[in-house]
Length: 278
Image (tube, rainbow, N blue to C red; front, top):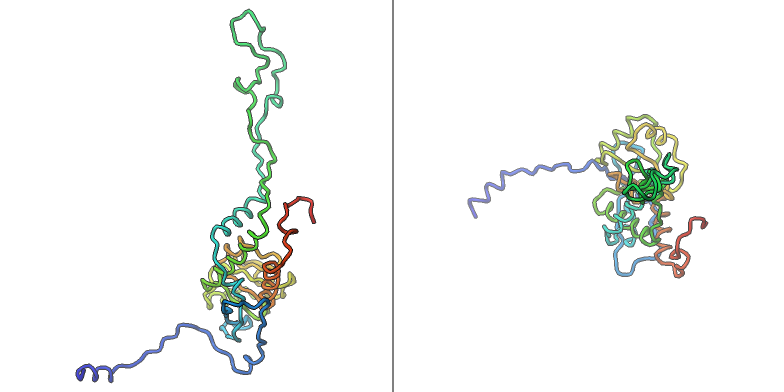
């Protein structure tokens, strides 16, 4: 022990900088209102996330926000996520593969040979499926839509599972708003690069009228996309590496999803889907 102690006296501690985050002053933290969760959880603690800014390239922590565990800490049902992705890729797909039946083929109107006397099998048309160049039996007909409607709660739990996975993987960030000081392309690219937000980013706000600067800056970048809350879906969240929500978007998402999770009358949403229903 006596031989080890002198070695520790000569050691120096090296502090490494693991994050570029700069914690804001206490005055700014006091301006952050504490969120009151709708339908407070009884047996789970609220999850917390940093509220960040977009007005500077350097990341600034404005405060901590509570997130509802039923939305951002739900059981990640991979099977429901797969069903949502499959549904989203198929419901707008239309197949145009088409084959002709015997009545659509040209020719074949007369009987090819007499019924009796030649020793051949009897036939009534050369466009029979038995002949080369004849019709196709049970072939595909166009247009063939692949539309179907996924059950309501399968879609709902797909959203909660995807949001929970994004939060667990640290790919979900919350900002105060989408206001940036300039519409230059280099600003938003440098901001995303400095914060390690991944190659593709999805910005979500509570309304479809976005700030003009971020709209102009992301207009020519295909992997930076803006989306309102009412268009948020499983496929888009999985397609982008990072999901950036505004504080108002978080409140609207929780309000909508929690309302459906805690509603008493589910007959309207559980009924069979009709194409012409409102």
